[in-house]
Length: 494
Image (tube, rainbow, N blue to C red):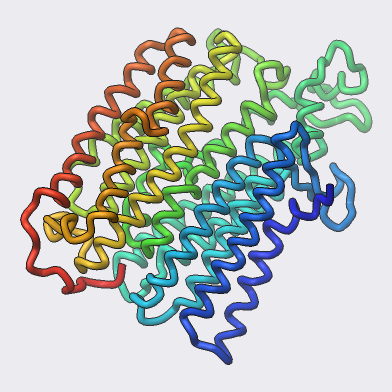
């Protein structure tokens, strides 16, 4: 198979993103930019689908940029995990691009830059998912972050949009810097940032490999003077986790999300909640399922009687509980529908991280595998459900002219199909049979029970129950509430 389809997934969006601003010198057609964005994202969908079909056969795809073989050069690697998420990301970007045909007519200017930034965001997301190199992950995380900052501030004449972007960018810059420091510690310890090469070295038994004895013992002998690899690896993981938790929206690094999601253009908010926050979750999974596994000798040293890797997963699971309850409890009081959906996203990210408690080494492998499958399925179901809700409710808010729920009363009766899609999205996120959200939550619930974590499992049910208050509040407002006489009076661009 020609594996160039792996490398093109980021190259094509970046090239088109740089061409579009040049076209503004000659063309100002909204349809042109919407078509260019849609055609590009559709091409990327075809590429990611091609890659996914190949890895589903049991193959692993790789593409070395510039002909430099790994671990010397940058390499993209596609397996079943990032193959699925890559196709999901491309698909959501494609549907978001289709939405721009209608949305561009609702904004006065800047549509060409919106197209450019969306394509750069796509490149950043797919680059993070496909890369087999920690340093390149940092680079693509920067591409993702910078384009996100600009998209949040797209309506730059709005005070709150600029403030939300500044809050996001200041702490986001700190997060990516910390991730970079983590990469430095990894490189200083192992002499490589290639993930496949790191897997070999992090699973090396120091008693069986005299070549690495000086590295593992912390002694400084000749060319193998790398220092204490245990401490440096633990510090690197801590730094990178802080950045990844920020991107994922895990407490206490999620305070920026409500304002950023609420002030972004509707198709961008849908992408943020649908797939962008999954990049952080994916990074955490790669750290503990691919790089520092339960069989790794690097993070196996005990701390307070628990292996360091397991201790980190326990802490992440606890932070997931806090995040889930926080998002669910803060959802109901919200009057801004975009903020309400953002807290819904936070609660589901919390549920996902709660399930990481089943990945510790003492848990039976079958329970850990079921937990990981449930996490992946819930990432997919939440991405689709939240994307539908942001697009559906965002469209209704544009029609009404406000994101305030009190001004959206009864509007559902005027747009029954759109309202029906919103209701289906809510029910899926709630976990109602036979929708997909039920099966992902059930898998995580049973995995946590089998892992001996009944309180975590029950918390998934409780968080879902609390979230139902916010979901049915919106449904009631749209369907039962009195129709607003202010429909059509736009407060601001949405």
